[in-house]
Length: 273
Length: 268
Image (tube, rainbow over all chains, first blue to last red; front, top):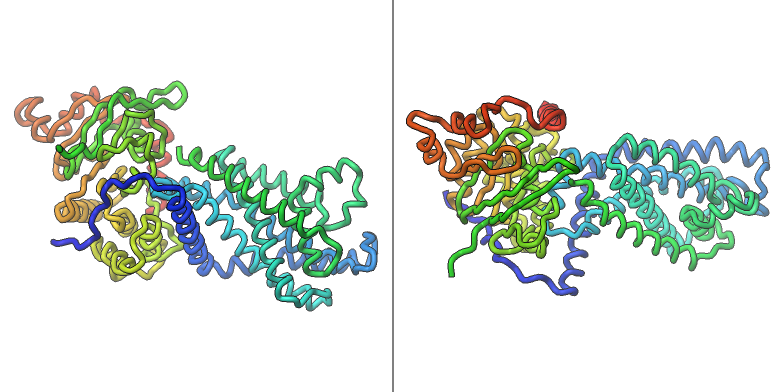
């Protein structure tokens, strides 16, 4: 039998920095593509995951709008809440992404990927991207519901695009945070426990449901170091036009995401040992 | 200049906590041979394999792959290796073709011929007709062959297989070995395989090393090892004499048993 496979590679020289950057970009692309291929076959789950945020908006939002318990100035509470729910739905998906990494570790998938000439950052970036795409699909449904409920949303395509970037960045950060935890605890059960333990403080210790001004001072501090607050601030500013610190928000989210990708990549090897 | 060894290990050691998994392994694998690393569960085979494939850290100058130091130039070594882990590791959410295409991209198979190359790899393992079904619909033997295609699409110079036939039925086992044999014959690639099936080692490996308690206890062609022990000996007998008749004991402990069960479950 003749096998017309390509010629086996010769021992190559070590790549220069420019070539390394190109390889990184190509690998990130390959990992993102494969995640999209998987999501395409996962449409039912994509849709059912949007039920919870929709219910938050519908039940919690409608009730608290009537209660008028939370002072949001001239902005109706439902309008104030909608961007918070977008961020929350993204957080709830991303924070458990580490479970997938542990599953891939148990199935041998991770080891096989780690033996390819792929920078670890590319493997992490693929997951972060997938979490972002899931968040976008949910966001679309939450936004449609919000519009039906009469929330005054922007129709400016540039602002919507910026909103998508903010959502992907926030999801990427929390996804990497989850991979970092996975790399430290190395077990699904412990990751679930820690994930559940930190989700609520992250959510309630942010500006997603109420203005930070209402919080006691110690909680304000927590809110200021919580990336979710910056994400919500940007989403609110972009979607319903409340005053926001877009420059700071983008900078914090971008720096946090890059840092989280780096730490998660460094811990990935631990999972394969 | 003589061709460097496909793999050379010198005084290789690795400990997990206080357990010495690999305790001074010296090994030379020649280019183009099928080399079997044999031993009971917990002998250190998988740990040795994981060090050669860069998954576990190795000290400098302990391992070279085609003359390249594994500790110093990991990325270059990874480019030369195709690896099939013990577990059935194809991604069930992707089709067979997508599984193979991912590895073609990760190894920079040029875009121009990538589609053909992926198809070739699939045809080579007899999955051309099932390439567009998701891998979760495959049988255990088909997944194993799909993994071979994933490892082969980059035309590696060293194919590393960790217990490639574990949990497979006899027909699937010989089918996997036949594919490995014909591909090796056609491409001249070096194959490093671990197994604890002595019959497979006898039939398909050019040379074998018997590992026990982190060390290599015997090394040679199956015929040499059998002849050394005495007339009428089988590789099973050699194995028993080397490991102190502990072939059937579960030295890997509960962890090894669990991993095997997990693989068996995935096979359904």
